Length: 156
Image 1 (spheres, one colour):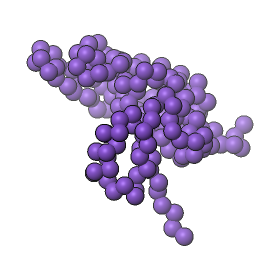
Image 2: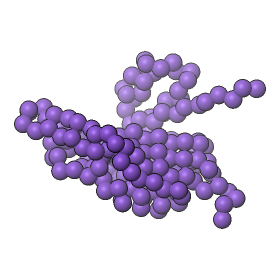
Image 3: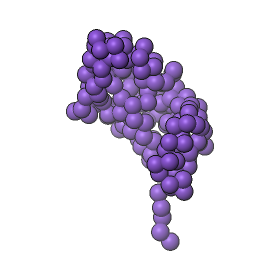
């Protein structure tokens, strides 16, 4: 029997999930409405969690990281990409960012605090660029990639 890949997409917005369904066949992706701080997935149910440019929109990023670890199976991996710390206020006011990026040490601490091992947080080597809708500011912010592994049941 051939083993397939199952994908679960979680978003707070049903509208965003509808857009995903429009672009990708429904049978391939299980779409669920939920919050990063309370992921609608059972404990230890998935092998990988990928969060792309999510945390700066989340009310409690450290709690979201703990939730990502909770849903991982032993040996599973979480990968997070997001913005490094910056001072561009217009990203908060115009793009509804809750956080002006993060210190990499904070991400490392959150991953370790969630019980993950083999934690790495480093530059992705890419920048996120955005212009203010008012035309008076432009942001270029470096992006980090963070990862950690949930310990195997047999790891001491």
